[in-house]
Image (cartoon, rainbow, N blue to C red; front, side, top):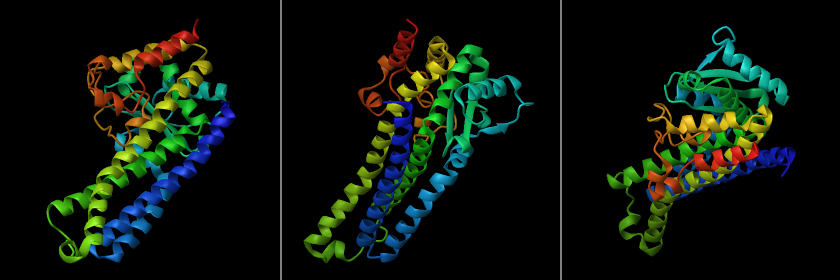
Length: 304
């Protein structure tokens, strides 16, 4: 797959993702409106789906940056970081993104935005302290590859919409547990009412899981591609390989990272440096990133 094919594919996937997530939210709204015998819930779900899709597209990057605690900088604030980003953008033929620093000792980074003209790159203060110039260049090149490949649009939209689905499901499940909004049809509405109630409960449980699995599938493949493109951009794969090893070995998670935004970082921000061989079976399955050891092996293979 060529770079241009990947860009076109990502643009199409953005539209498909928006459409699928809108359908899921509307579907949940219909089920919940039936269970509660309140058509207004469906109306709210439709409005929420449309509004959140637009928010995810146009302002998802601002939400992600705000929740991460990122602070925008100018060249005078950190000339070294600014120059690395600027030089790599010139090499890659990309417009200069906004640059942010996340005040967190855990080394990591991510890119966000809806396209290269509206992109942002965020790096933790820990990454600036722990990584040398070649390693930092490798990390920035990786993130700029996400920008050039339009990965950022897909990942940003996904982060916002996964959160909305999880919130809707959580509200419904909590209301059923505490007995709010029960409709008479639960007791005497017949077999259809019982079946739909069961379906709605199953949907409320499975919807965020399905959304998360979509999120994971999107993330893992893109990390390998961004690693390769980033290494080609710097022409020094060892820089990124060494950076990934340092990032993965850090012993604490990023304070403001969440499961909704974890897939956007260059390495899992929630693992806290836990060794891959010590992670549980389910942790590996639901990991937002491919194993660091595998990524490093591929990068070092590019140097031979």
